[in-house]
Amino acid sequence: MTTTKADDKAQAKAEYNAFLAACPSRQLLDRISNKWVVLILCALGGDTPEHTGTSPTPQAMRYSELARLLTGVSQKMLTQTLRALERDGLLTRTVTPTVPVTVTYQLTDLGHSLHHLTQPLRHWAQTHMDQVQAHRETHDAQTS
Amino acid sequence: MTTTKADDKAQAKAEYNAFLAACPSRQLLDRISNKWVVLILCALGGDTPEHTGTSPTPQAMRYSELARLLTGVSQKMLTQTLRALERDGLLTRTVTPTVPVTVTYQLTDLGHSLHHLTQPLRHWAQTHMDQVQAHRETHDAQTS
Image (cartoon, rainbow over all chains, first blue to last red; front, side, top):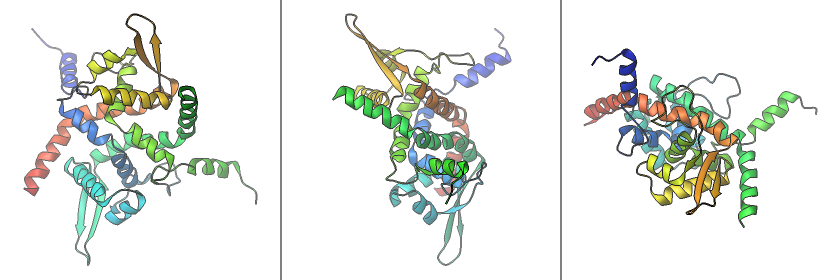
């Protein structure tokens, strides 16, 4: 039996399937489907509330800057999330030997590719908040 | 002081900010940044492993079909997630008085708008799994 290039491609595409609990891509989907990941990628991608232009400029940020921007994040959660993203190759951690040392984080190309997908999630949440709120009120009125 | 239309737009855009812990959009971002939400939207959007065409066809699905497709999801988690998505106006729940009753779920227009953003997340996880795995191995070898 001969296989065509299209078969090969279909084979490669079918390799991972996040619908399956045991597939590694399920765990990766779990990792990236996380509000802190979305907000960290937005921050390092330059898509912050201060940014007003059309194309955000990626930026290196210090740990303390991230902690200040992502209000409510615990030190433990921020550290854990940054470590996981660094291990997955989504960002780099650079230590500069100042006194005290300066630690900065920056997106890799892989991180940028994910940022392009997660950035719209934050915007969706912000721009559809009123609509969702209206649905909640209607729903609660009907079910109470 | 007079305001321009551009000012008004900037004002409207600045209304919600998911970087802020107390902003309702932060909680909404948390809700939608969730692997079960991503997978449920993919399923109802027709973007399932069985689907091979280029434009997936949205479909109504029964609770049991969703439970079978999303392997590893607990009944409690699936029920909770579906209820939250219904309350937020992302999907509709239809009860047909068969014996036993048939309960089906279907995306609303609002759900479709979110599905367009979350669908690429599953694909990213599946297509970048090998790259992430390679980064993890390099990282673990360097730090051990």
